[in-house]
Image (cartoon, rainbow, N blue to C red; front, top):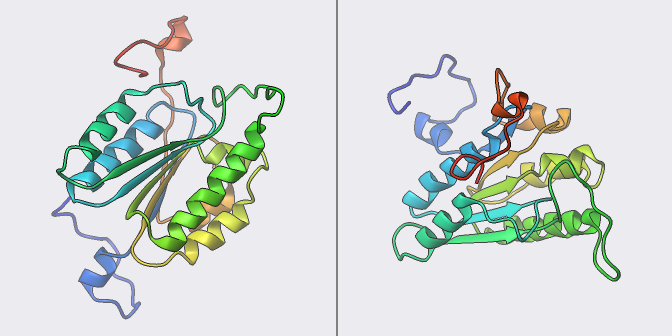
Length: 202
């Protein structure tokens, strides 16, 4: 809320403006629907501020086209707002780990290379807003070390905001993050046997 007042004012030596504008690490986790959707909504806000946006979509197949990708690509190329780059790593759905074809990188190797690309971007300050979509999964599966992720994010230069999505976000990341939202599920159409549909899931 733009007019919201913090409940605590820490004695950290910062002015209100300095504290308000410090870069954030945000995590959307939990079993409920809407983690990525909320992160892409934040990316729209970043685009509107003229910030360069980098989306790094872990795990999901490069063939999978989500509506937010098309919208953000169009907006990024519109000449208004900030630029938007969209990167995809991984293969298949978040909850299905497929065997790689001959000569192809494994999902684990793709996820690690994706993280290396994020690290390079952070070091170069390539973007002001990062969406690391489904990045909680590679950490949960042991493909990427959460302690390293926390260290890299702690040491990132400039004013780069990072939002990470996915179930089972590791405790180290949750402890470090500035904002953590746990998406809980009360009801879902799939509980009644209904598959995902256009305009809702993609």
